Image (cartoon, rainbow, N blue to C red):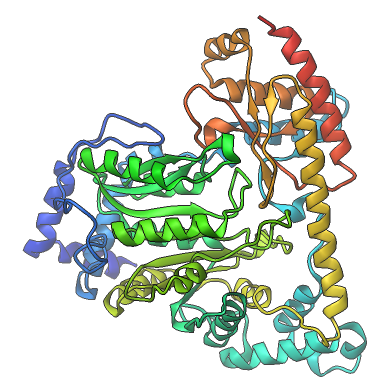
Length: 555
């Protein structure tokens, strides 16, 4: 370690590194900590081009230097991060103040039973299905168990405990892992055979070819998002277009990497519609402020809003990105969670290919995760990104960033391959697998409908239909007295409501201000994940509290 530090220090003596150090020492701290539009004051960094250029070595984050600069690059990353500025700007609402308070209340319930007017905390704040009682898919867990303990594959008892196709799949996977060791590092992009399986699954889903070399296996979708932000953002003069409301991962990652979040607003009146006209408006406004738009984030199905985009709408978005030279960052982790028969999931890559656009026409990064869908394997931390439309020199830089973390965990890699290649008709596990999958998705659909109806029956609350994902995002019109009480408490009105709700009922919602919303409107996000037998308790506690709250603050 000492040699490494000394080596990094010596690297500072060359003139190139010294000039970078001078830049960082001169860098002023921006005064604004605005959540959704960072300060646009100039930084002492290379000037951004006036408009989006094709992705090249000249337009990615200059920290992604050639290999002979890596040691000094590491020093500068540490130096800049020690200022704490980007960390201060970062917020992550789904594990914010309300959740911290809920955890404290849970500890009090354990140590002092009966100390609150409720006997349990009902966590409706985060998409964490198994923590709320959802059972894992049997086939997936059988394969994982066999891969992690391969010595039992040869035992006669195994045939009676595990399905034949789980045993066969475990052998196939182990044969693809060097040394058949799930405790060893893998290739930094992920095990090649598993990427082959995922690519085949993408081809089966979309009807267009997929290249295993385009796939980077990651610890869930979040590290993949961070990886792309790190590559795309050079300074606060680089902007990423994000939906409002948005999943806080995006505002947090953009802030951490020093960029500017460019908001485009979803239309609540049309079921959280995404209008291309709104994208054009925000793009023009962004350019007028001297910010270079780099990419467009689209979450489909939507989080926190639960809408599913129509294919025609997606075509318009693809055309917009192509014309404007924007990278399309497609968050598609809820692709299995579609609850309305009139809507279907279509990947953005499939839509682009069906329009005749290939690798040279548009750059698309698609994110997938094992945490969502019907599988809900959040703690296993598996996922991937499929990176298309980038040249080999950029691919090298993406690989370099991936290699810093050595590799993603092997259990997550295996799960990602299983999600994209589940049992098929004729396999021993197929019927039980399909029954488990259908049971989970059907229950989620019923829970969504029950909660949607409950919200719409509350005074001053309206809630759009949950077409997909795992959330509802109702709008609440709070009395003026409640808004003034929130101001006196120095908190946002929706946070004030959620805090009062938690203290009275034990229900954990996330205030809409943590996701972004049109100024003057207030919302909260509620997951549909509490088990079906818990939903009546959520509805009854919420209804009783809401009536009392509205009476207390009635104007």
